[in-house]
Length: 112
Image 1 (cartoon, helix red, strand yellow):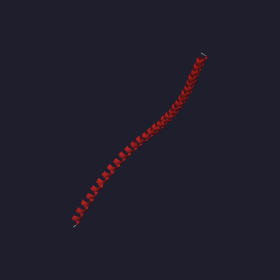
Image 2 (cartoon, one colour; image 1 turned 90 degrees about the vertical axis):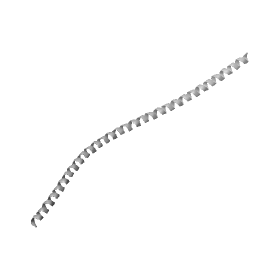
Image 3 (tube, helix red, strand yellow; image 1 turned 45 degrees about the vertical axis):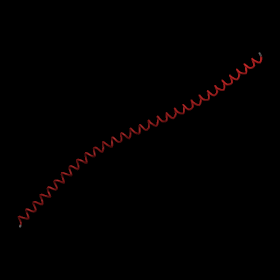
Image 4 (cartoon, rainbow, N blue to C red; image 1 turned 180 degrees about the horizontal axis):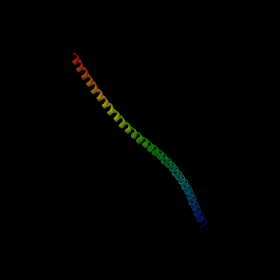
């Protein structure tokens, strides 16, 4: 019986040691997983921060582009107006040249 008790104690001791080893391994695995999760959370926070920065920069760029397009639209209207004005002046100059040529040729015919 003593032998049986000793064998049972040794089996219980072996099981207890195995359970302790498993618990230590489990704790190590849990710590490792927690560390990895914290690392992932840090990287996600950095990523989110970078996305916010890029979004802000993109919005600023968008506002600048809209402002530039509005300026270009105003310049386009101004240039179009100036071109129309110049076209009218050119037509008047052509008309004046035609008139002067006609007037000078009729004077030359009268003098002869």
